[in-house]
Length: 117
Image (cartoon, rainbow, N blue to C red; front, side, top):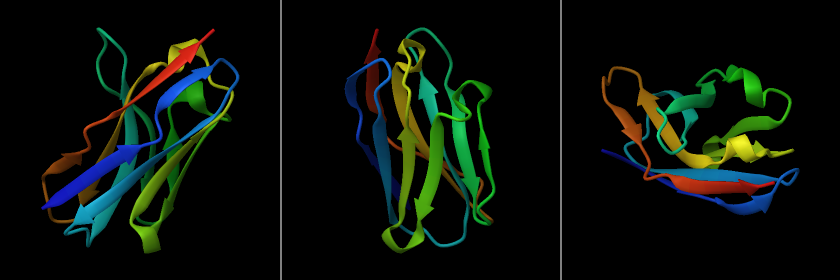
């Protein structure tokens, strides 16, 4: 079993920065990929950024150059550094984890990011 705990959300003015963290607990061997998704009110949950076990990253087009996803394997923690935040970045941000040989997708409870203009 895997548990993901996000933190770091909050309220910030446009142009500001936040860093989200996601700590993975439990059976976290054989991680295939981890990622951050977000869901704004009335919208579907969409990928923001992801990182594979090999370190390959990909980003949603609107956050390229502003957000940076990193992973600290020693701390079992995933990060999302968010800079130059815009009001349209307002959403609940979720951490996701997938493992090799496991069809389950694990999700955290989410952390709210509110950007005011």
